Length: 377
Image (tube, rainbow, N blue to C red):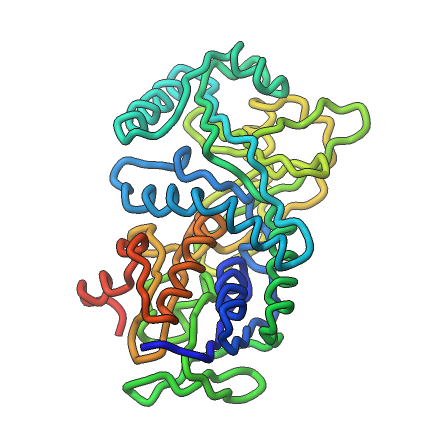
C-alpha cells in the first residue's frame, strides 16, 4: 500500500530525516514532538563508525552500518542543498587506540575479525599513531586507522534537518503524543496533549519513548542511558585531534570526536537505569580520567557541558524499521548507539515503505522478527 499523508511522531535525527525525505518526495507530512531536535540526538557524539564499533555476532548490524555510512556523503550533500546550510559531515576518519597489552590484544582481535570480513583497517604502533595525531599521549601503545569511519556534528546536523523539513513544506508541531490510535485493523490517528488528530499513516520515531505509544511496540524498545561531555580548547592549549579517537583504557571504551569550532565531545557511559537523565559525578570522573590518559592535553581544556541522553535499545541491538501492528503503523526506532549513523539508510527505507517499495538493505531490521518470536501485540 502507498500513502500520501504521513504523521511522524518524534523529531530527533531519525524523525527529521524521514520527514524531510517524505516531504521532499511530495507527501503531506506533519511532525509531532514537544521539543524538536532534542533528546538523545542532541547529546550524541556523532560518530559514523560501523567498522570500529563492530562486534562478532552482530554482522547484521555491521552490514546496516557499512551500507548507511556509504550513503552518508550523498545524504549530507543533498541535505546541505535542501537546508541552505552545512550538514556537519567530517571525513577525516577514525583511529582506535589502546593503552596496555590487554587492550592491544583486544584491538588485534578486532582487526583480525574485520580483516576476515574484508573491511579496511591498518595496524599502527604508538609512534606511527602520534605522527598521525600528535595529540595522542605516551600511554598509547598501538591501534588501528579506519579511514572509512566518519563523523558528523550532531547539532549542526539537527539544525540542517529542521531547516530542510520546513523548506520542504512539512509542518512541525510542538506537542506531546500519548498514543497511536487504531480501530483494530488500521491506524486512525494520534492522541496528543492538545487532543486527538486524524492520521492515515503514522511513523513512530520517538526513540526510547517509542514503546509506550502503541501495544505492538510494548517491550521492544528500552532506554539505555549515556553520559557525554563537551570540551573547548582554551588559548594556548594543545590542539585537539583532527580525527575521531576511540580508545580502550584498561578494557573501558571512551571516544573523543572533534568539532569544527575546536571543541571536543567525550563519551560515553552506558547504563540501564530507566528514564533517568541526570548526569552523575562518577560518569564525569570516569570519562575525563580515561580520555586524559589518551589525550593528556585536554587537562587544559574548558568543560562546557555535561549531559545525558537515552538511547533506544532493542532486544538484539538491531533497529526496528518497517510495518508493525495495524495497517498504517510504521516504526523507525531501536537504533541504540547508531541513530545518526543509520539516518540515511533509515530515511531511504521509510520512503520506500511509503511508496510500497521495500528497501532490501534493511531486511535484518524488519520488526516482524519480534512478532514471530511472540513479542509485542
